[in-house]
Length: 151
Image (cartoon, rainbow, N blue to C red; front, top):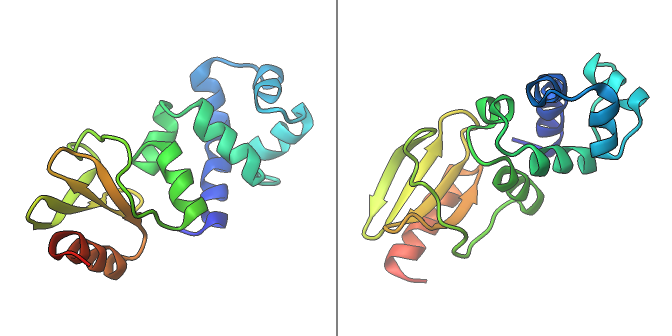
């Protein structure tokens, strides 16, 4: 998923996230640091959020069912994946992919999973720590082999 696609996706979920949280437009605009007029334009789909607003929404409402239903993973991790394009070091511990993930391949202590909603890939170790994320399956398989067999 490209950055612009993600911005559009989050923009489409602004009103559901706001109503899910029980916020008025005034309160939501204040929380996000945007004008009420801008929020109304986003909610009516006349414009999209800017990247800073997308990051704020994902950080502040990372447990939102509306966001999780379209991203299928922690929204903050997804923002990092898009912003950095990929990462190649052990990250935080995950839940191991019980809900939104399917196993693609296992090699030794590492396994490659694909998100069922966003289709991005990640590599977890046997303790469920995330080592790598990417939208590119070939890149993910290459990294899985590097982790398993050594560089």
